[in-house]
Figure 1 (cartoon, rainbow, N blue to C red):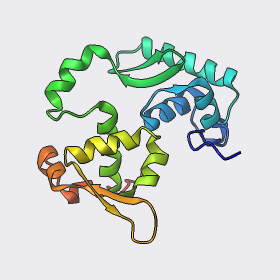
Figure 2: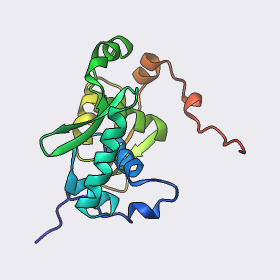
Figure 3: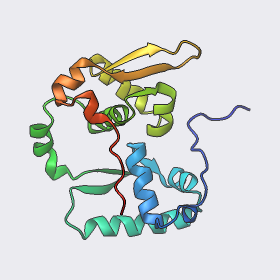
Amino acid sequence: MGVDPEAPTPQPPAAAVPNLSLPAHLEAILYLKGRPLSLQELAAIAGVEAATAELGLITLMADYAHRDTALEIRQDGQHYGLQLRESLADLVQNLVPVDLSTAALRTLATIALKKRILQSELVDLRGSGAYDHIKELLSQNFIERRRQSDGRSYWLSLSEKFHRTFAVKAEELQPQPRRAA
């Protein structure tokens, strides 16, 4: 029996991440995956039992419900996702003149931060939904894809259209030096 490529990779327990509460760890997972996850997937990625993940998720959802924020944790059946509040849909359409889904924009932001990334690495970061985002980004010419010379994956990078549309120069994407605290 083969390994399921869709199965989440177990991670060290959330407690192993210094100074990060379980709700914050779950929030980071939901943000980085960019797609709804089941409780079992969240628990496996966080390295905790499902009951513990459920308590952390309830705490996180309550926190979002009681603060004035643009984000919310949304439950859709047995899956949970981090998303912009639906009441902000008009704002998103006004601010994002391109016709890209929020998830595709997050994937594009990940590519922009990395400048050049292997498609397989991007899928590891963003989940299998990234394949659809890549197709969407390629079809609108926001990214370029080149076959890896010594492997089976593709290199993804930003296109000229990305830089024109988002008015971001390549040098602005350079990591900023950390300031001493």
